Length: 216
Image (tube, rainbow, N blue to C red):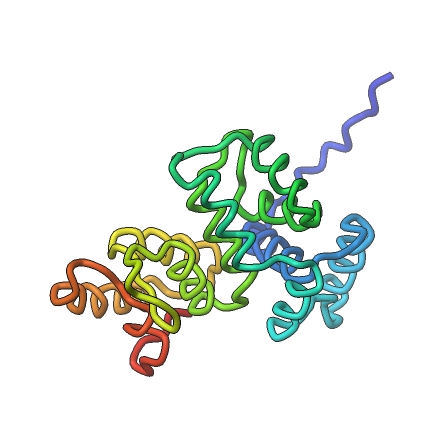
C-alpha cells in the first residue's frame, strides 16, 4: 500500500548545497571508519550548534602517513595511467589494491572528485596530491615533483608547463571552495609573467617561498 502524502511542501533551504559541500570536505579530511555513524554524529552536532567531529588540517599529514600513501606510490600510479586522459575506475582500483593502499581512501577521493566509472586521471592525481599535502600549496609542490618535465631540475626544485599548473591549481581551488576567484587570478597572473623567461614552465621555487603568493 502507498503511504498517504502529508500535503506539506518540502522547503529546501538555499544554503543546502554549501552544507553538503562542507560535509564532503569534512569526510575526506576526517576519514571516518564508519561513514554512516559519523554522518549521523556530524549532522546532529551541526543541528545543535555543537563542535563538529572533524579532523583539523594539521592532522591530515599524520593520517596520510599512517595509511602509507606516499608521493612515490602516487607517481607509480601516474606512470601507469598518466598518458591517458580518462581511466576506468576498475583499473585504478586494481592497481590501488596491488599497492596495498587503503580502500577507504580511494572511495573518499572518488566521492570528492564526483568521479563516474570513467575518471579524469589528472583530477584524480590532483586530489591525491591534495591529500598528501594538506594545503593547496603543498599539493602543487607534490604535483610538480611527480610531473616534473625537466630531468635536470631536481628537488628542492621541479617544474611543469604553465597550462598544466593552471589546470591543476584551478581545479584544487574549486574543490576547496575557500579560495576566491580573485586570489586564483592573482596567482596565475603573477606566474604567467614569470614563465615568459623560463620557457613556459612553473617551478616550485617560483611559489614555494614567495610570500606575495597565497595559493590557498
